[in-house]
Amino acid sequence: MRRSPFFFTGSDGTNSAEGTITIPAYGQLAHFLNEAPFNGGQPLFGSLTFTSSVPVAVVAIRGFSNERSEFLITTLPVVDVSNTATPASVLPHFADGGGWTSQIVLVNPSNQTISGNVQFFRSRNANDPGTARNGLNRWPDEQHIRVHDCSAQLCAPADSGCGDGHSGRICARGDR
Image (cartoon, rainbow, N blue to C red; front, side):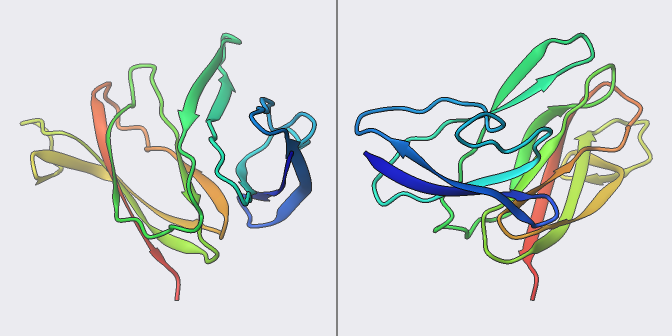
């Protein structure tokens, strides 16, 4: 049996719902975070942090019910909090416009608040007045973000008025 302590951190940086889970050797645990043994509440937005003295395999899934009551899921990355050095990230494709929307969850695994900017780009269009940059045009959407330690923030591109695919660039730095 392996006991692993855990806690939730909300987007405001406040810790809540601390506890301990027990997983038997060669066992598994599959629960939504708003269910026992986690009891994270609902709605839940933030991060779950846990520790283990032995290697564990983890899969994180985000669920969302759309306006047609369809339950949609996607996988989320799991971050090793002992390795927080990461360069700027590039999101190669996300949908925006034409009935599609995307949300980007920025997770801060470190023990200090980070801040930076999120810039959104779209494929170059000859009729686009935006500034050309590496074959991409930036539409006027640059968002300043601040993510509390061990927490998460949600950001989404402003409405671009088109249904094309887009890419984005995220640059974050630790506050001093």
